[in-house]
Length: 258
Image 1 (cartoon, one colour):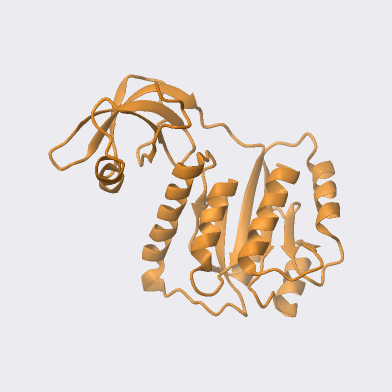
Image 2 (image 1 turned 120 degrees about the vertical axis):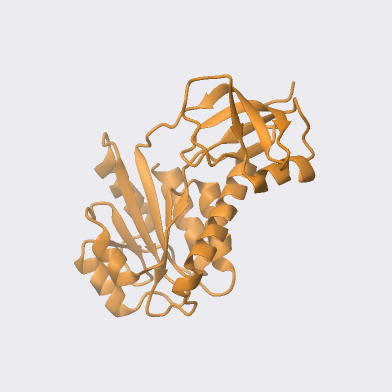
């Protein structure tokens, strides 16, 4: 019998948080194609299935419909959807080229709960309104693939792009909101230590981090965020590329506090 780690993992658009089993679900056409034509699983082969909330079941392929969709019999619940003590929101200024795709992938691997694409003064890439749905759908697919590979249970989501000003105004509680910038005076280590002290014993804490484009936030944006309650934080002595900074900040929060 294969171990849980060696079983192939598939995404279900159907919610799985039911304790009733055995139960049959249908995988979406793309997942079904990947199961049967790429990974070549057959009827009775064991697998894992997870949904967008992070709930995961072990199951087995019970058959295929005429249109090729795979039927999965859920056998046993592996992981419930458990409310997290912390929720990490990373607002990333949209970088050039395909770096946002890489950032979205790393966010899923690191268990970031929400990725917010930011449009800032120095953002060069602008996503047209008519293209938003297609781009977000691609990002969500990248998240699903990354989650399948790394066995992440975090319900990672990516939102529509939003302007820096609107996002800063939209955060109701800025107790744990940070803007990372080279002109900040408080370093990452001190920031994390202060955060650990402030969140000790607290539940349902939402942590928000603003990560700039490769040209950094403008002085106007920095001052606006600070005036709205965001705490300045310095990532390090060297200037990092946007995708490197994102991974460093997300990792620091996940493994230093969360």
